[in-house]
Image (cartoon, rainbow, N blue to C red; front, side):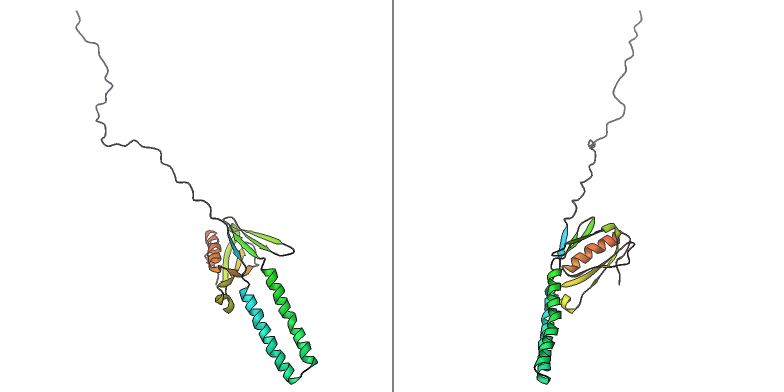
Length: 186
C-alpha cells in the first residue's frame, strides 16, 4: 500500500500583508472655477459737466468784459457765438452717456449711441497692451481714459471718463500679459 498523501496547493501567500494600508480611491480633480461674471463699465459725465460749467463761467466773465468796453450789439453777438460750444458740449455729454464697456473672459464689448446704436467687439486674445491717462478733472472724479491696442492694428481704441477705471485697466492688462505683453505701455 502506498501511504502517500496527495499534494495540495496552498492559496495563502508567504508574504505578510502590509499594515495600515488604506485602499486607494481614484483621485478627483477639482472642477474648474466658474468663469468671472461680465463686468460693465460706464461713462462718467461729471468731468465733462464741470468743463461746461467752467466754460459757461468764462463766457459770462467775457460777456461782462466785452459789454463794459463795447456795449450793445457786439456783446450780444459774442454771447450767441459763445453759446454754440456750450450747446455742443451738452449734446456731446448726452451722446457719451450711452457708452458702455463690458469685459468678459473672451471679449471686450463697446456699446455706444442713443439714436443709432453701435457695438464693437474686441477678442481678448488680440489685446497687446493698454494705456491709461487721467487729467485734473478726471483725477478729481476718480475716472480715467483707457486706450487699448490690438494685434495687427495700429489704431488705439479709447474709452474716456470711465468709472472704476483702475479696475478696468487691471482687467485689460491681465489679457495683455496673458498674450505675451507686459500689459501696459508708457
